[in-house]
Length: 250
Length: 261
Image 1 (cartoon, rainbow over the protein chains, first blue to last red):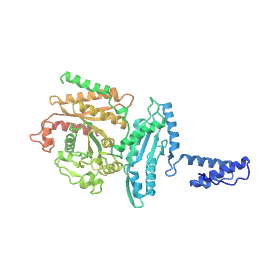
Image 2 (cartoon, each protein chain N blue to C red):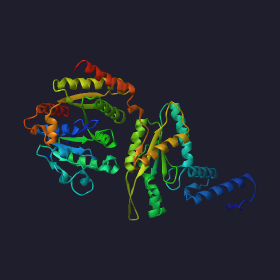
Image 3 (cartoon, each protein chain N blue to C red):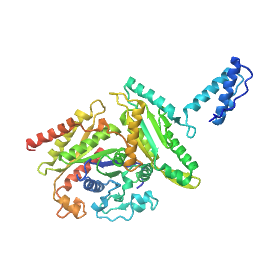
Image 4 (tube, rainbow over the protein chains, first blue to last red):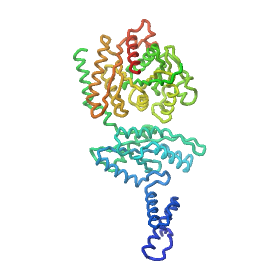
């Protein structure tokens, strides 16, 4: 099958300047197609204009067009960087995965336009409940991920609880339809004792999210928190004191 | 009389169920009301509420009706004959076992509507460390933990304190020791508090500051009048013959009132 070629701007010669003009025209066309052709891109300073276009292309390549959140490709870059930083600094990093419940039913019942608006509302609500240093991405159709850097597991649970509470339920009125949307949330955090790849950490977060789905949806699931778990030592200490009291006949 | 002072909120929790939390809440509320405090008891066990049963009431409206817009707070509020007000909750409502934005916001709005009318609001929370229990504990100024000298109760109380310290940075807890040996209930109360405190200091306080502080506000001895009062849906002060444990409840209420000043 013959590939469809994008018609690019006119090339009048093969000089480096012609080449630069060719690239710039192509880049501007991509930005125009993506709805990102901003009048501020154009200046009389050609070097500045090229820089503006490069910045706009970079921005386009890392963001999701529908929600403005980071896209799945760049999410993996940020997650890998944060996992590395977590190991270097000794500060744990949280990862949250969030999936809109019964999204297919919303799409099938109300159509894709309403479905898209639901995705945008959920994205906006996540953003409202984050710290400036957190990164939110749309990593699938109705699936989001949030990276919580420099976050203790306890702080990550607080952050995830805040978002989970804000989203469950989310009441949205779209074109006269009152929708009650819920989301299931899975949360994990990096372990300082052993390193996990970004893919492996994401799988763990996914597993927690599916646990939330299977336990009734609209829930937040995370691994047991080490700091709140009762160790065998604690159990024995408490019981030893009770036994001591009983032995002394009190 | 109108007052600009807002009520102090106390969450009554236990970790383990069946340790007498609801009985103690109801009797404490009555004793506090007798001492001139304006008291509201909110049944915070939103999924399995039963304060109304203990009090011999049959509420027509509940907190759920307020939240669903079926009635105003004053329509659900019951002025009990025991001197305090009660906001009952429904039972068997599984949806209220999960904390939602809706539930949290409506509860906070309800409390801010009511808190100027009372000196003390007691939350009778459910058992365990579920998200609804933790939500009420986080909303409260003080957390009162009810324990019995049984190993299971102590372990669950310890776990609840640990979760609240690690997740919510709460470090002050009031303690009531229920079902204490009637021969020396105060000694049992002191001993249980000392033991819990020592294990907490050894394991929970490590590397965190400030340390957890447990304050015993009283013990309630085993008393056959207590189960009898529950069966008869009465408070201890209403039983005939008068229950010996009433004076322990009054002492507890006085201690609690002083801690709230």
